[in-house]
Image 1 (cartoon, rainbow, N blue to C red):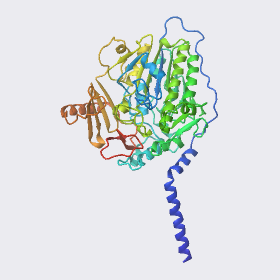
Image 2: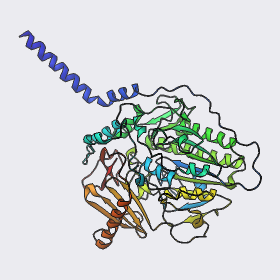
Image 3: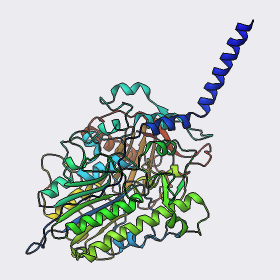
Image 4: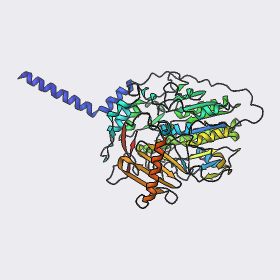
Length: 559
């Protein structure tokens, strides 16, 4: 009898332990993830290569500065009269790029998520042309996001375990660096490589997210110098730093994954990881300023790609303290991050002026995609519907400015659709560099349109795709096809720019024609380099943290 009692007790203890472990699985997984973080060395100074001591004789091509920020929503800046917390966070420096140059009122991102958008910008091609269709993410991330839904969610995500067998070799390893094997093909030509043919010194700062296997890192894809991180996110400061204010979103699986899995670290030209000095956005800006000064006497290309304002939401205390009028803690952290980003953009612009370079520097500012719904803030993309990961306007219609005082009239406004794919040819055109002629380039040089030399629309059609979720914009007609839901939406953006009136039933012939265009575009694209491991619901009109209601509009997103 005693034996049975002991066995029963042992079973009870095991069941209790398993129950406790299940209830605390996120904490346990976080501890495991934290133990696997790569070694990070102490901060060390970066020595930038020094350009010529004197400027060249005669005219030189313009400097080019791409500022690509992360997850900035259309309504996160005050340019159009909005801004974070109804304008409580002015963004005068970002706004100045549009006011002193051209505002592309219908500027579109390359995709609704980070990496494919960056690939389009870097190559001038739809990322689907070379199979870089999905955003590279660790398998552990895909599993968590594909299995854990928000509390009370009506629509559940899916994780496709069977597709792991089709992943590229090494990409499913437990190592944090395994995800870097998911890379843009080395055969693709970047804008940095094109500009080097014209003698530009090329520099990258911040986020890369285009892969890290041999030949795919920034310093191997045309950048003379690169300081930043290969993966899709990083900490701004250590979580417990005295000068940081954090905001966590407990309902969000993405947020729960990021905090324990991200290092506070950078690399310089492939060096071992080392700690930045201070708040990440400040640090990257400090280094960009040093690089501008080092290269003031030669043409340079700077790709400044901070992780601001992507999660994890971490603000400097001094920026947070400057916004006491914002009562909501999460919104205040987000606003403080936006405030800091704007200040650092201003520091870069001021350095160009101080060095006498601003008149002959083409500055381009945009975001990789729209603001994220999972942060729980409803107005980030106002007045547009949708969030990051959706192809509704909120996911892909972004701030899109270009400033070049010597060539672009201040206060210009361009009304027709343009995209990230155009920045490749535009920068090449400004520099007088030839674009590759051995492949399809989807973008066009926008400068002749901005100057009035060429009239009309740069594009009759633009395309987006993420797995079974596909979109075409033809003229002012936009059709979205979410095949996993057997659902289409058709909007006439000329009269309905915020996508409120679905015309797919009222315009069956047009719907069929646009679906045929999507099918024809699919025939021109490559098979994805790796399969989608998750399919998740993304709400269109309701941010994360709000209870879903029956009848809420949503899409199913593949990644």
